[in-house]
Amino acid sequence: MQRKSLGLMALVVIPGIFFGLVFSVILLLVPAKPAAADCGPVSVVVDGNAKVDGYTAEQLKNAAAVMGAGKALNLSVKGQTISIMVALGESGLRVLDYGDGPGPDSRGLFQQRDNGAWGSYTDRMDPTISATNFVKALQAVPGWELLEPTIAGNKVQRNADPYHYQKYWPEAVKIVQALSDGKVGVDAGSCGIPGKSGAGDDYPWKDSPTWLQVGANEASTSPLNLYYRECVDFALWRVNQQMGSTSAPFKFLNGTFRPDGQRLGSAVTWKAGWDAKGWPTGKTPRVGAVVWYAPGTGGADPTFGHVAVVKEVKDDGTYVEEGYNGNPPPDDHNYYTRTVSSSVPSAFLYLPGLEAKK
Image (cartoon, rainbow, N blue to C red):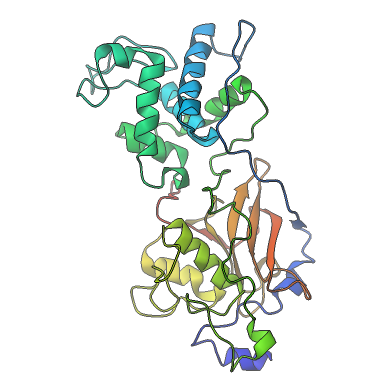
């Protein structure tokens, strides 16, 4: 069967037939099916006893106003944290009645300019109104939830340095956790897009026969031109889904993904496919990124390698990946999740918007 599959590589390629058998014994990988991250909006609890080390009552009151504005607009906890991060980076969570050199007319928590886009002077000096206007602008950024927090904030603020806000993220997380009405887990990439990364097994062809069930010569392929229920087909489905292509005709296909006309192919070629397309890659897991295992890496098949998708990022140096064909028979060619050390994969393949600072 292995020799037979090798002959089909030019068509769609069989990725990782023995991957699950090997992968399951690697000690660095811990099988897991964790609960979904708490990514929804959180309410704010602030009273006279609320304290966060390093912040005054006035700053916490302003933070509560920012979070409350986000909650009113059904902004996710990640979005609320981005809002706090930006306010920290712009004003230190203070309502400033002055600007700076590049923006002398900037005012308020978000240092919003007097250009008509942010309302009146009174609006910009009002924590709730200014935060509401920031949140609306953030929600208008296409795919903002897929972006690195500092990049998402910069899409609204247009700071000269897109990574200006990055150093404020840990403090923003601390404030949101302290002021929320329950414990929330927040990470730069811990919350998936509703109905997309993090949604679980929404692969649309989960009941289709695999090539092993019908024979390689008779096997049909998915609309993505890859064999049903293989790791590559699930990963390419996620790529399409996250890029807004959720039904046929799909935007990204095995035969049309690369601009040079070569097939995306089996898992072994995916890094080269990303490079050919000019999409970024890196060593940091981000929700929605494709996880790429070179042949033999982390227990992947020594010929074909393996691909999966980052479902959740944890703060202990691990992430949760999701995919297909990652378990031994009889559970191969089915959906799986597992917790993996971030140092195990060969690379993470990012979609546009999942920028990684070089």
